[in-house]
Image (cartoon, rainbow, N blue to C red):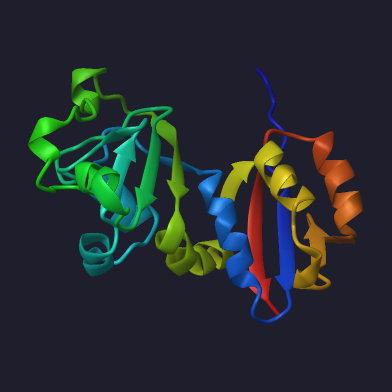
Amino acid sequence: MERHSPVPRVEIDLPTGFLRLFSTLLAYGITVEVPAGITLYELLIRSLGIDATYLESSIQTVLHDGKPVDNLFDYRVHASSTIALSAALPGLFGAAFRKGGTFSPLRQKAANSSEIQGSTDQPIEIKIKLFNMVAAELGPKLLQRGIRLTTVDFLNFMAHYPERAGSITVRLDDDAVTPKTLAVRLASGGQHIWLFVKES
């Protein structure tokens, strides 16, 4: 039987006021494991902990693999889905992709997973991307709670982390390391990490 290495745990302490800088990391996408057959509404409310009122009022665009989803209550996600969440987008593009908007009957919508594959008892992995104000507002809570993302995406983000953010404290699996050492050790490791970010 194949044995998998444990997912590395990375903990980062930031100076006060810089946590939102890491919220842009959510645009790369976080990996979430959910029960097969779960609806998109259940995913966002239960797995991500998004408040129902916030979901209704602030998340105006929901895309599945690049196609808009209007009915979150009936739509069921499937393995390897990519779900993108955004606040209202400007102009005609925003109007066209807004969930339940005026133009929704005219555009091509995402196919429901029930049309693609049958249900299974096995858990599935999907990727969720957060953009603009949704990332800024939900990001800090998700980062403090912990997110799972690909090692490549994390290292790409850290390579462009602004120096103005000041010094950070980093721990890898409970060992204090420098950002440079962290990059070296992760580069030779697995495909994903667990990331926890908080302000000192």
